[in-house]
Length: 114
Length: 115
Image (cartoon, rainbow over all chains, first blue to last red; front, side, top):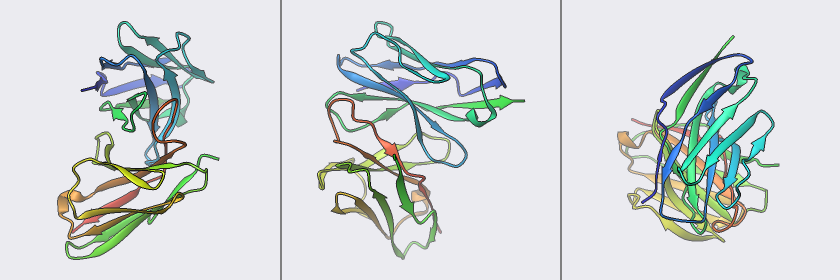
């Protein structure tokens, strides 16, 4: 079974600062995908960033980047120049290459203060 | 355009009612999903339709009945629900369903309350 662990239930960051959310996962698969989703109070799950396990290069989307350490099974999300609109619950998720199901971590609630 | 729409946004129903949740996407995606999300918890997969065939049914009680009339529409029929079924029901779609870099895009959800 694959498990995803987010060890930080809550994080806080000041506007314009940088914050890193951690995620570790456990799998015996070699081909898989990792995702970060954001769920603001409006409830909609929004894809933030995606990483293919076979790619060594870390994915980047504007202010969002990941630090993917395959050997350590670690997939952290860095948010640079934090904005008030970044406040949300952030879920790390895993999917095997041939599978349908997203396995989610328990989430990290990010608070952004002015 | 990565829009998945869901109706209604909110639904309150009694335990003897029959109601339906609707999900729609016009992105040409061939896989659609229902997730259930309890408060302060991650989403849990309920059903997957791939190419309009039910591919995954994660041991969901029969009081939940999915239907996929065509590749753009996904319904969830509800009957004789229990108060513990109160949750946010999320629909998602993805281009292919499985394999490769298939990414799921979520709708805004339906907040269901069972009295």
